[in-house]
Length: 439
Image 1 (tube, rainbow, N blue to C red):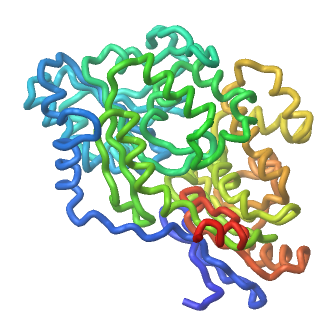
Image 2: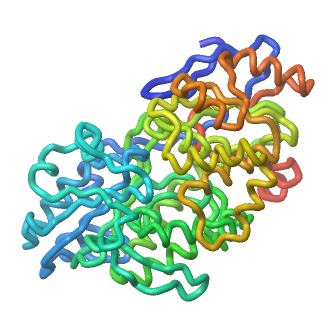
């Protein structure tokens, strides 16, 4: 492949991009991680030797029921690898299959049904042998009220199917998250299976505008701290955490205490995900990480926020996202319409006084971050003309031409290319900082 030809994750495949001849590209990828040669053996080992917990077989003895949380379709979690062995272990330890449930942690996203549900679970045996349900955050009767968090007074209501189970296990994917630091672990519970009031409280502006509520940061991050308090209020909970590479192959799996096992996975993937760059760029080209994260414009915003540390003020951020499913929820559409009508400053002013955010307006609030830094341009094949207008960003039909225009505007021919979008977190590290770190 030519030095000025790059491949971006896009939909279920890749988008080939020929850069202008004058461009000097810098490719930014995660540090390579070794694939696990035998994923089934690695999962069995994790279940037998957990982090800060007994084995799953021992944990299952004497329990009358169990509930396993899985992420919704927006996360490429390899559920097909671990659900059946987990369920069989529980069953062999004495929990009846009829009392084992799999709950899809939809948060406030739509349910996953039909063929999509089969794709998500990835194992017909699971669908045939245990109860599989979607979480519905707006169903008041389906939640248990645990009171309020002690520090920030967030109302805590959790799906009854999970809260009432004897054995509770969250499963998920550990990857950078643009608000909560890292996905997986405690995040699968809240917002995953939390009531809409819980979700809307810690997605309000007092959390979202906190400078520590950013990707790859857990220290002082108010969302992470609130999620930990919710876990402690819930009581005994375990987690199985996975890390995958660009090919969606397993590179790490941990099981055990929900906080400790999640931290172990974060420790494993953190260094490979944070990529230092010696400069900022006036042109950054990225993606929304391909399917399933680029199914909607709602999810695409994550890819706009992650590379901001290397975008020069006034620079151009170009993002490619298929948006095969369109825009997102009606609530998100309404928030974007308000942004278009009011402009960024007036829109933000409508949020800061609220203690309870409107559903999905927090994603529009996150879009304000790249808009404050520079120009955002979107390449997509999945949005209607009305949807394109509501993005409030510049639409482009030719990425190569957009890169060329950006180079001309800035007078800088260096271009940062991030093929895997929000799964990679580039960070500008000045030369003097590098020397200090190496000393």
